Length: 126
Image: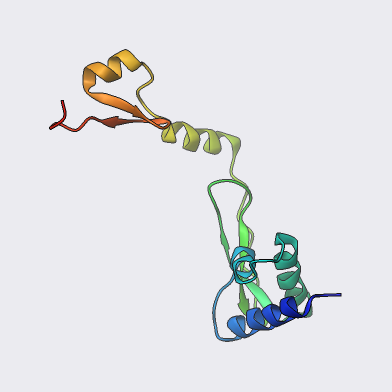
């Protein structure tokens, strides 16, 4: 049994999709602050299985698999993108890492540690 407020939010999701908006499960989850992620997935899955929405594209986040973006109406689903190769994931991670690993060299170059990275010291303070 679905709670009445979630039924109203599901109707809002349906109306938003009918108005032409493209939604992911995260957008649906944001519309229902007290609902679970599973509810957001299930809401879109039910509409998809009825043939009322289709996958218009895929969104890839920094981590995890690509997530489908849904639009209203029957249509041809966008093909699912290939999984990222392990080598590409590793290269992406290595490019995000701080290039300065030695704190003595960083101090000589005028850098200071800020969180997990290095930042240039303010010229006025040094």
